[in-house]
Image (cartoon, rainbow, N blue to C red; front, side):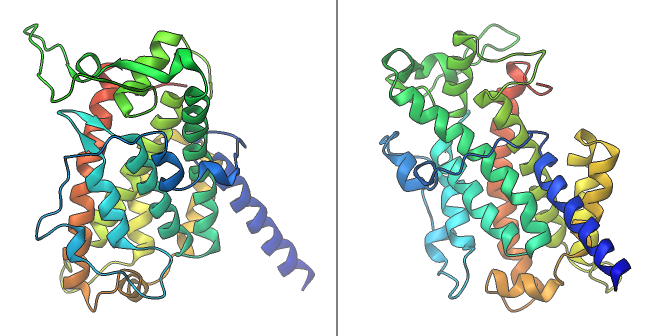
Length: 308
């Protein structure tokens, strides 16, 4: 019994350590409840979003899933509300999407849920920066929308955008990048708690989840559906593993072993079979892809894909 207890304790310590290092962000948790939730962030950003309107296939056609903390309909609502203008992403619905993705991971069990704690800390950092900017008159107004959404191309031309008013500093991905670069808070050589560096860590994790959900939506190969554990491990190895050291990669394997079987995911999103799951997850993956691609473009244009 003594050996078994020691082994269990070692695994628990390993997983806790994994949670703290998952996004290479250290133990920088911010648990103030006022920083959590879309409602609190909405008071910073009252701009209504005209993009992502729901059609017949939008989240309005989905019903809530009784008894579930994670709601795929809410995830779709936030993801579809995030794209704005021609190439930007609104931060409030983006962070709210992460709130729902955190609930998704926590539903997969305590071992996988440990990973979500570090993600929560990252969303809290950006929300705290937004609140601080709101209270700082010099930082509250961001650039003109035309400045942050007009991208100079190789031909020297610029894309037109739909808005021209000033916005809050942390209203969107591009406004945050513009403000932080101009305030000199982004360090390209040393680790900081800038919103841009924090966003990059979330961005990398979003690719992992996108790929996992994409694989989970796949149809059977030779009549066989691969296990979610196998799919999640595969998605991790081609994404986040590239940014983790050996120890974290090995610890991640332990977390994926505890992944529930496929039937659990049917219940989680209120579907009956793999065909329905594939349709549902395909919509989610498409919405994530739009948000991911826009964020990737903004980070790449500003040389931020490798912030330390």
